[in-house]
Length: 321
Image 1 (tube, rainbow, N blue to C red):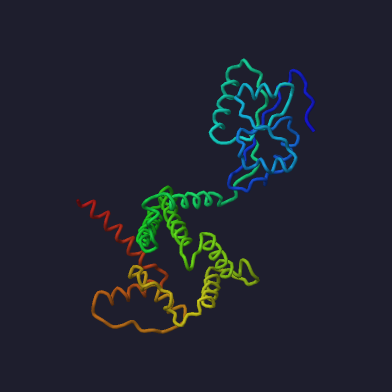
Image 2: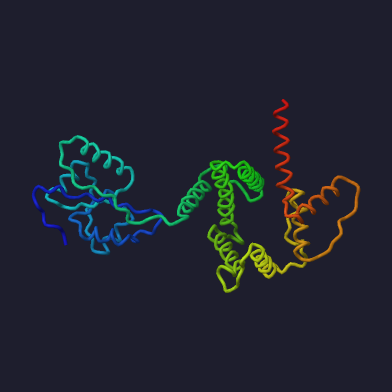
């Protein structure tokens, strides 16, 4: 039902926006109410994704791209006009309305911006996937990359992320997290093209969701964990069931930094309740191993500790230059 026109009333303009990351047709109830009650619904784009759903719901839509003056005139008599903005015309229309309002020569209708749908948390990840897909198809460099060729970048970005954490720079941290995320999305996009065992970013995300739920029975199940230590026990127990490893050293990457490797082996050994004597030797490596094991046992990350000491050493060097 449309409103009865009354001379002299300025009317109402409603700019109805919707997130392109939400499936078209999934509009809010206020948006549907406004559309059904409007005197006129305008859309400048005949290919607008909302059009089929509006027509299916019985909402008549006129394909038109009015300028600001024409839109104001369409509201005369107290009419409500809903506009579905689309593309580059959005700024032209809003700028035109602002100029008319600022001129003081026109009785302006009420202007309302009505969000018809909102982004859910994580929605921008959809943009990242789409951008990566296009880059993979159209960029001469990116289209030729392989998992092996990109491996070094994943390592570099991980180190830069650690440095940003240690520096405490929030802007740098946000940027480096993005760079690490790019590596994940890039590898997943390449994996889609595998002729024998393809998988996608959705498979990657689905796998980690299942793993997190399984390893947190105190959150998603009936078990309890009131301390961080109990949480770690749950995690290790669930992980052992999943992996079915023959040795506590299985799954420890040998390519990681040496101090981190030593600490990881020590942690696995201690958690398993094993008593393993350290190998004897006179070299620096054996002494560093003993220090790393002792640090891990006392709750100190030897890799982080040495990095902190090295950073202090760098400051001293610079001061001496």
